Length: 349
Figure 1 (cartoon, helix red, strand yellow):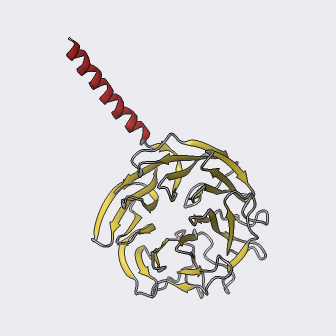
Figure 2: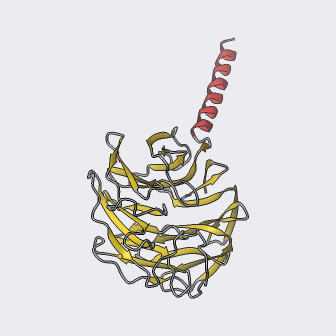
Figure 3: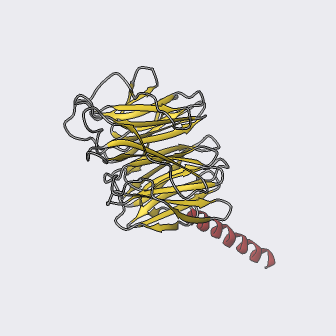
């Protein structure tokens, strides 16, 4: 009898563990997920739900996540089509930035030691200058945070603007114009990208130049004091009257070489800096991640999320969804995030 009771208790405990593990990694309601990985390996995912900004945390390389915590409520928040909260993590702080439809970039800072979120100053130092709602955020490993966005100040035409904030501070640096197209505007509905690695900061954006809407990149190696002249990725061009609403993705490897994936005419191309472009897929809304040995991309194709490991030329269908994002985890695996029917989906590969 005692052995029977012991066996029953063990079975109950096993079922409980399975249920709680499933709950910890269960799909949650939300849109436009983005992730950041801190130097200690903690993974934080931010997403929006209505006017709410939420964050959930994983300490086991994305296998399980905590229950989402509401960080803030931002009335009339941009949410959809690559518009939504962005997150970056560093050694002692994490930062979330989100944009409202009035054209302002709001920011919230997490102190890792206290676990408390606090509101910091808005990133754009001219009210209403960022109505498109398109921005990106990254961090170095010394609590420096860097933001890039589309800004219409001056002539109501979109330009690439930049600012930085150091962890523990409450005010952003004076905003800096990174690029203004001589043809008046960069592509007005494509999300810019930003990344940092080994003291190099790189921004990419879809330009609008001579009637073409191609992906360009510019870098800084002097703590964002100066940026290089923008250079175009790839050899092809896209003459287009309208905006494709697709900003592609970038990555920096340990040697400081920048790579990009982007869509052109419904085809997805990959290119490493100063190398020829190569077609890798058909679709849109692509993103990229790299580590020392692997290059992986995700994209949307006919309503499904596809994943490809370029080194092995293998492809997986991850399921229905849109707006995928991809990250390299500390254990070398890959975390994929996407939105599907107003829920946050994730898979570790």
